[in-house]
Length: 390
Image (cartoon, rainbow, N blue to C red; front, side, top):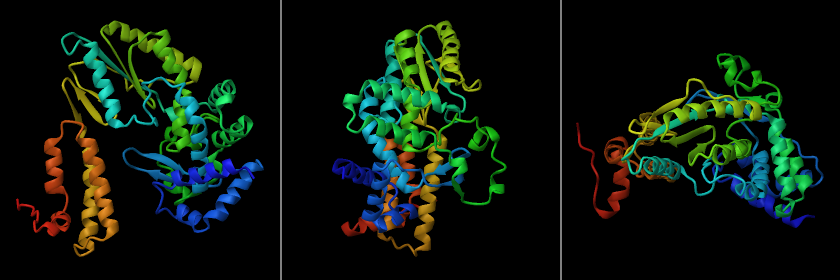
């Protein structure tokens, strides 16, 4: 028995369950944990592991897209692969690719782009321009053969850094990349319920071997690997100093507007002939730095940043659902409801505090969250927070 692999498999299980503790898949796996882990381990060491059926459904927010939710046991394998190969690919990534990277959370991305603008404009005293581009249908357009070849080449040159057998990890990666969830899924509802989804947003109509299912941990890592050479092309061949990328959104800042127009052509040519990708023609943004630029969920302006309204609206909707749960519970707060309130409030307050949002935070805490919830926490100190009537 390979004790090290078994230990790493348990570690991958604990990582996979962090945000899945209450899902049916996770609970079912945990009910016979040791038996299921050993069974998965036996499949791995005998090289008979195959991906199980996914759950297929449509997500409507923030945009309409189809989701293939992989079985929990397969998520464990995702984390196992991720833990083995991430240290190698981390050294291959440029500093300013931000997706799925340790210590590079939302505030880091925004502050980094803001710093680029400040530096290029000599602290807002000289003119510079911001170019923001987006790859058209990125996850739907990733060529699996190109991706696997990139992974294979990098790992083959760094076999000595791998803490697992080279051929074994390639076998697992191949199983994940070339798995076709469109032929191996359980539909949450009838297939006819999905006919309204545009064909260009569905894997069922995608080009063969040219897509990755979104939201998987491995897909996030593989998407970074796929564009790693493109990042180096920007930094090393085009010699662009101020560049940052999050998945398929990237920003370039330069003092010469005409130069940026030429860069668009060069980038589109590189993507088309090397990665079989195209820039989204309707998402090309080129403006003076004094105009705002939307990067991910934040509007960046000189000296300040704002959260876009859509992000705030999503948060208010979540709080509204929790308030209704509180009312249905006769204003009694159980441990689960308390945990849900605190986790959502803390996560958004942490996000908001990095930007110009004092009034939004005040409105959130005093008007959106139920007064009964605040009274629950302050009553032990003989103090109650009562919401004023309008």
